[in-house]
Length: 473
View 1 (spheres, one colour):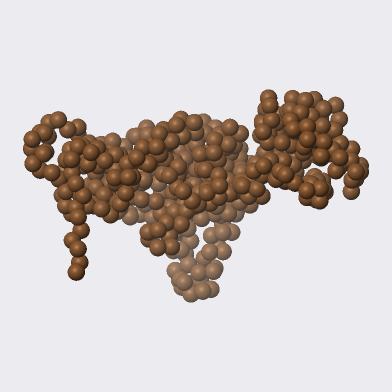
View 2: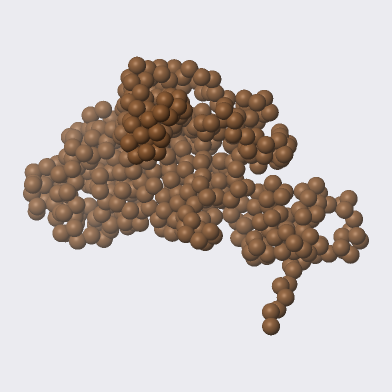
């Protein structure tokens, strides 16, 4: 394959010369540009079949150039190969995020360059140069929600009734009933009762993950290793590019053995709409934030969680149930979800290892659409990095959450409780020689960061000390 027009964009004359020499000898027509502005102008003059792009350039970086390229009607769909000294750090799917179809690490050999160019040209039709456009007939949502957002139906999962959807739900209902009868899960006599239990709302929840994958053609656009690419950089990239979709971060936890913690961050135009998590500490549950804000008592919260009446047979978010019972307002729940999302991101920033992947789609799951937090990544990261810096200092003294502390009653009596702040007194009262740090976090309903910071302060003032475990002979 030869004769195609290739545009080389790099501010390093040596790289440009080497690439020009190799590809010209291979029969390609090669032009070059020293920066993004010049490259755009040359591409407008003659549409290239392929662009070889340096990541770090004057005037605009590689991502900014790709965004400008995609904005040009005559240049959308031009495949791009990234040339970078760090091209392999994120994994081969990372480059798909901005329409880049492949990457090559500098320095590269003549054979490697030719192979990447040939491969990219063969994939030209599949180059990701335009945004995903999906038109779906969606009727308005019939029920009210405590998090309703005024937004176009094309930015929602299809949650309202339509003839096509009702037909699909009927098929799904009968398929479940027939399967259960065939496998003797229920008797033929009980089949009608099972049909009644399988309401449209419940079936929508069952089918939502499959519907999202099939209807909206979501795909992994970015993935990598947290040891090589810090999660803060990933979040900043998604915000800068105003991305839509779901970022999933997973990490194998030490306790319980073999358990993997998972955090899903939902983005809309680069803003954080909702953060869901699995196998994180209970301190990150939304009920804690409501209780900490004194919007609901611990006893009432536990009672609502435990209730499993007919109205709650179908799983619904705790916030929705509390609003329906008029125990909290929609604003209270949104504030709690916002605090929850921030602290879950702060926790992610502390993860030293794990894997991440970004699923690019313009349709978010209903919970994210309803929450509509719209959090700025920059603001969250600013506070998060400040906390991480404090954590590094605090962990030198409070390094074991199974550890137990004792109060210095004599010093406390000399100082006087009136001189301590409310939060300090709450934590100090929980330091009783039996509660470990995890217990104090749970009982105080403070964030683990806040508890560790207060314990660090109390240790520094000698008001508490570590309990020394007895030596076993």
